[in-house]
Length: 76
Image (cartoon, rainbow, N blue to C red; front, side, top):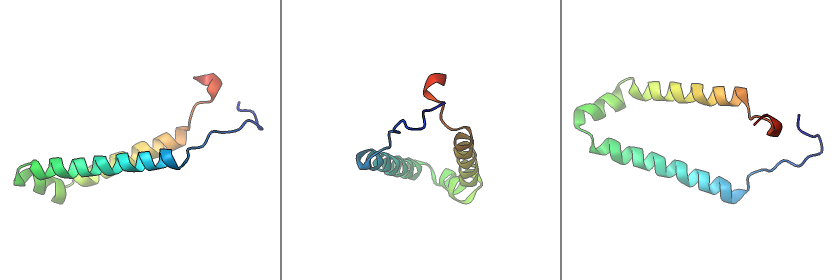
């Protein structure tokens, strides 16, 4: 169990900015790759259930990670 008085290391603004920039780069990359696909596949992604499925799977994964939390230092 973690010590009650032990300081927790929290991310600072450089780490937050780095993660934000990485997310923006991934989204731009996905947009570019999708733009290179044939029109039929683009329609399937944008107007079909593909995007909804990705959002559902991503949300479920995120909620699972939040529910399980991080392991304590002595449990690694």
